Image 1 (tube, rainbow, N blue to C red):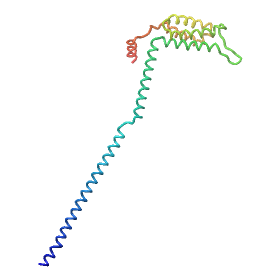
Image 2 (cartoon, rainbow, N blue to C red; image 1 turned 90 degrees about the horizontal axis):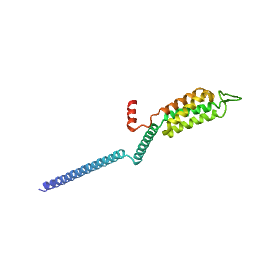
Image 3 (cartoon, helix red, strand yellow; image 1 turned 45 degrees about the vertical axis):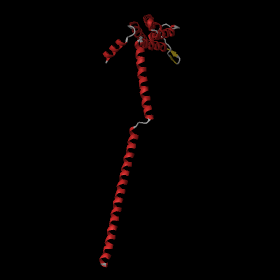
Image 4 (cartoon, rainbow, N blue to C red; image 1 turned 90 degrees about the vertical axis):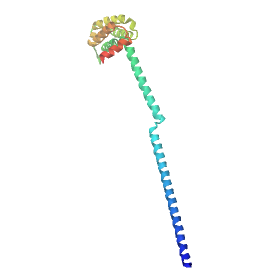
Length: 204
């Protein structure tokens, strides 16, 4: 009986030790699982924060885009305003007449050292006629209501420059001024919005 009791005690102790070991193992497994889950959650949170940082635009980038868009719209508005202003006056004819007057003026001022080139009548008119043509061309651009009057006077002076201003600025200035004055006289008046749109459609 004593031997059986003695043998029973160590078996009970072994069973208790085994139970304690299993409990410890299960607790360790549970702790490891919890730690893994916590690590996974932290990784997911970090990745979400990084994607949010990349996805959300910075205020500086938004301001730059807005400023670029505002500059583009301002440039387009300026271009449209200039086109509208140009269509309300004999712009091309006035520009050609201005170029012809400038060429006439400088053709009468040719000075090659000791030699000065002059053809036709010398005097003040070689300076006055080009200046008057330029002034008339500018008036036709900025005051287009009297464009016929300005164009006729400019045309007469451009033809007379063949005699009075160094062969009409070697023919070039006379041709530019004459074509510009004819375009100024032939201008049909300001265009309305519908006419300008129709002209753009035909050119397109």
